[in-house]
Length: 446
Image (cartoon, rainbow, N blue to C red; front, side, top):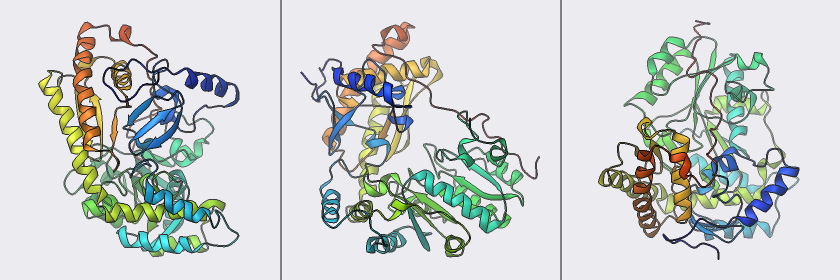
């Protein structure tokens, strides 16, 4: 029998998932298209590997097991799976075609809509993925400033200019690696000490889980402007979630350029670059950044429908309120059950994260235990609460009931000193790390 959303479930039967995985190993390298969805982040032997259906906030795997999904497809599902208004927009456009030999009117309509809601959108460029627009932003910043070096903070995709500074940098020429430097979030003094006339752009996620110190983002904008460096906000996670206009609206600060993807089309592949008209003008002549599928009309229609829903239904407010119920509820349970020494939930309400302290032991083993027990209870769990508009109060009540079940088991497992022996599947894998943390140098070169 396939599992339903019930607290008394057994660990799910994942026979069909495992069969597909064995087939994949013979033909795919790697087997996953993005690390966060891959088998290394979901304990092999317990967690499903393949999903086939979603509706609202629930998903079903290939074996028929049902889960409340706390991952929201690693971010793109901002409204919910199979959301009617978005699906209807896609269906209507599908009747007329997908990709054409000339530009499509929806390109203009979407750009006008984005200009209405995103504070710095004097001009808009449309592409397909977050990595695309991050790299386009870096390229145009280098062209505009006549400089080469980049300061970055956070994750910015797989392209050479960024991934060269991580431990997965094989294949990236050393000359490219030497142009990018990392800085620590909320450390304005390190940026001031390092900015010089060689730095074209400073790119960061406006927040990941830690909140910016008062005035931090505004001061970054000021010091970048004074140095002739372009400030780029990577709003893959913050855009359309913390506010419809993203972190720029929420914190009342403008970046020279900003990039968006994930939440803006409820799962359809599209990415946006917005920014100053004088900088964006360079795409008309000097800077090349084009893709055949940038004007693909199903994604354009989905993006327009999604942004309208996000704005008209006040979705960011909903995510904040319901995310608070989950985050605060978790922390209250941790205190009540006497496990707050080992774990707490942090971050902004729209996207919070369950963390474990060093006192809990090996973090990956602890996370694996928590994941196996939440999956057993019908919650697809990877440590994050990526909220979407379809997460109901009933969903949150259920998830908190599951936490109430699991946290005492986690406490006992931690205090037994042999948590690994209580795992039903393999320990989760660590994702790649930066080669050197916060290696900020120039002033040229320090």
